Length: 138
Image (cartoon, rainbow, N blue to C red; front, side, top):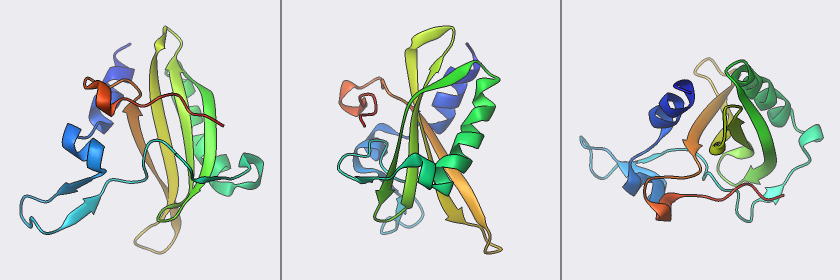
């Protein structure tokens, strides 16, 4: 399936950045740029998905991927200290269930002050095993 590898590659971050979850700017080496919430919720407090606007809206966004043969197999909604409510979902391709992708979605403020949603997508299995992550746990 050409779309899933492209999407995964387009959203993947450099190996060093994956480990540290930040990257230094080449123009200003003392500036750190956040790449978003971590792909694994770890010990973040879980939020009931039916009570979260973020989970509902992010579910609608990921629904667009169903047209491309991807489906959600697991999802977790949690509260991150920096990013607020984060919805994470593991997606699989209908034609290759072993190829799993992590979809992250959280609310952001747009420049005009309105609410928007930002997404991050990455494969569960990375080239370097130390950067791979396991399936979501409830």
